[in-house]
Length: 286
Ligand SMILES: C/C=C/C(=O)SCCNC(=O)CCNC(=O)[C@H](O)C(C)(C)COP(=O)(O)OP(=O)(O)OC[C@H]1O[C@@H](n2cnc3c(N)ncnc32)[C@H](O)[C@@H]1OP(=O)(O)O
Image (cartoon, rainbow, N blue to C red; front, side, top):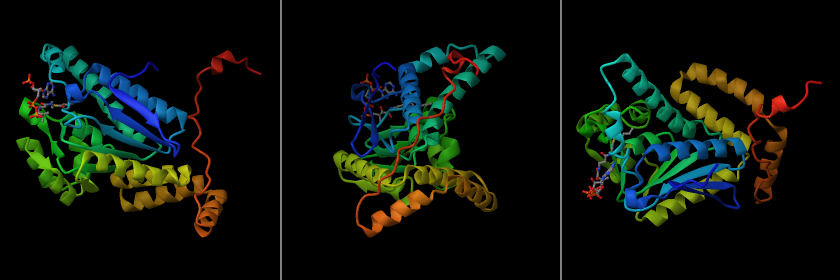
C-alpha cells in the first residue's frame, strides 16, 4: 500500500493502532482518494491482525465536513433518467457503504475521538465505531437533507440503534446540529471532554485498556454485541453459545485470573493475520 495522503497510521507499543484524518485545511472532507485510502488502510489493519484496538481521530477545527461538495459535481451529471445511470448510483453507493462497514467488521474495537463538526458522511463513519468520545465543541449533523438528498451511507440505519428514533428523525428532516452535550445525554457519545487533546488521550487510554485483554475474547465480545444489536435476544443467546463454544480458551482464562491475582498485565498472543488463499496457486498440488 502507498503512503496515504488523507490519513496517518501509527501504532503504539501497547498494540493500539491510531488512524488520523490529516487534511485539516480541507476540513477532512471525503473525496475519491479518501475512500480508496480508507478502504486500503482498514484492509491492512484487518489482515495484519497486529492491532488490538483502533482509535480514529482527526485534525483541525472539524472532525470532518463530510463528502467534499465538489465530488457531487460529477455525480449530478450522471444520467439519473436511465437505468444504467441508476445502476451506477447503486454501485457507487454500495462501494462507499462497504468501506464504512469495514470499520464495524474489524476484529478489534474502534474508538472515535470527535472534535468540531461531524457532518454528513462523518456521521455515517462514526456510527460504525464501538465507542465515541467528543470534545465540548463537537456537533453532529445529518447535513444530507440540506443538500437535497437522503443520507445513504449508514446514518439512517445505524443511528436509530444508538439514539431515540424521534431525535434521528428531527436531525434527518431538519439538518439541525446535535451538540456534544445532547449527544452525551442521548448516548451517542460515551463522554465529553473540555479539549480535543483530552478527548484523544481518553480514546487512546480506552484503547490501551482494551488492548491489554485477550484479543480473542475481545473479538468474540464485539461479535456478540454487534449480533445482539441486529437479532432477537433468543437468537443472540443461541449464537452466544456457539460462539463461546468455538473460542473458549482455558489458557486465556487461566492467564487472565493469574494476572488479576498477581496484579500484573496478562500476556496474550495477538490475533493471527487473516488467513488468505493468495499465493496458493504458486504451490504445486501434492
Ligand atoms: C455520503 C456523504 C454525504 C455527505 O457528507 S453530505 C454533507 C456534505 N457536507 C456539507 O454540506 C458541509 C457543509 N458545511 C458546513 O456545514 C460548514 O461549512 C462546516 C461546519 C463544515 C464548517 O463551518 P465553518 O467552520 O464555519 O467554516 P465555513 O466558513 O462554513 O467553511 C469554510 C469553507 O469550506 C467550505 N466547505 C465546507 N464544507 C465543505 C465540503 N463538505 N466540501 C467542500 N467545501 C466545503 C465552505 O464552503 C467554505 O468555503 P469558502 O471559504 O470558499 O466560503
